[in-house]
Length: 382
Ligand SMILES: NC(=O)c1ccc[n+]([C@@H]2O[C@H](COP(=O)([O-])OP(=O)(O)OC[C@H]3O[C@@H](n4cnc5c(N)ncnc54)[C@H](O)[C@@H]3O)[C@@H](O)[C@H]2O)c1
Ligand SMILES: O=P(O)(O)OC[C@@H](O)[C@@H](O)[C@H](O)[C@H](O)CO
Image 1 (cartoon, rainbow, N blue to C red):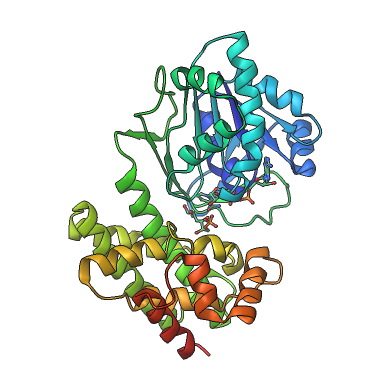
Image 2: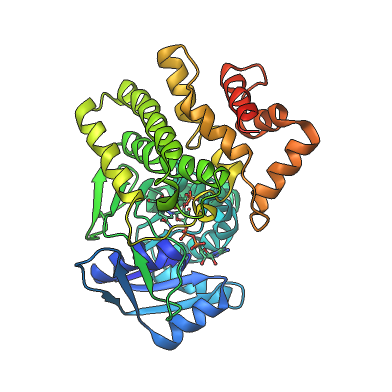
């Protein structure tokens, strides 16, 4: 069985590639980073190390790599032969890889009519659905009809903390032991891919929102507040009472919204929160606030980890959330010269002022109760 995986980065090698290899797939990584791709083709294996005191490292084999800039034809051929396609490139790159996926699918359908699942493993709601939209923008309406019967784009939620890597071997990855990969089975054509570690569900909504608005909201809140307080890593930031108190408050607010929306058991959700805070505190992982806070414009977006749960909270309680507002205010103060979105956001704030900048990225009006709550906290952080 053959898998094509776009993005040979942290989660690509440390999670998706590992599980595909363990399920018997030969994995072809597609990436634009020539150093990584050359190394994959030279060594044909790498090790995944686990950030705990007990687990042994696992070797991932049966891999190859394609540099999609240098050899687009090889990407097309790999998609023609693939039994599954997965991605972990970041939400902003989905429109870029959609072109290569569309070309591969158009040529594939001329050669054979085997069904295929294309799964975007990105931290966002509806990642595969969005990828499908980008792919369909690249093909004619006639081709689209043929595609619907063969190619499924099931949405997914992936959870495993994989920080930036500092290993002697470029390809090796150090990951937390915990993982979860949930895939919505509704739109899969043909048989469900037999991948060890995937949980198939009828409806992904509750899973992706629970994950995104607990793990990722909590993570980003810690990163932005930690950064404001001068901390460099997530575990360091949580040693300070101020950040920990706000994190707890944020997760109480998102928890209240999630329980209202999906009827989760309150005790089970409280346990889930504690487990996640424990994962953030893992002393065997050093995860930089700059990685976790990357892309503040995306993270302050209308459907992402802050604004959507804040809007749910407002809807259910008729009050704007306090702690989510503190975290969003800290996001507006996030400085990182190496992060394009952080630089862009600071420029917007300088040019238009914080309320207008927040309104633009969040999609909320300047006089919206959430914007007003964020501005109150923004002033306090001065
Ligand atoms: N790291 C984590 O803890 C984690 C966990 C769950 C989900 N995710 C999600 O996985 C995705 C990737 O995150 P990551 O941490 O692995 O990032 P990363 O930067 O380590 O990896 C992204 C990879 O995509 C590659 N890439 C960029 N443009 C490309 C293109 N046009 N074609 C092919 N490859 C391209 C990059 O070169 C890089 O190797 C994100 O959506 C992230 O939210 C990450
Ligand atoms: O990948 P991002 O930028 O959406 O979010 C940063 C981290 O919160 C994220 O990568 C987590 O480590 C991951 O989602 C854990 O499953």
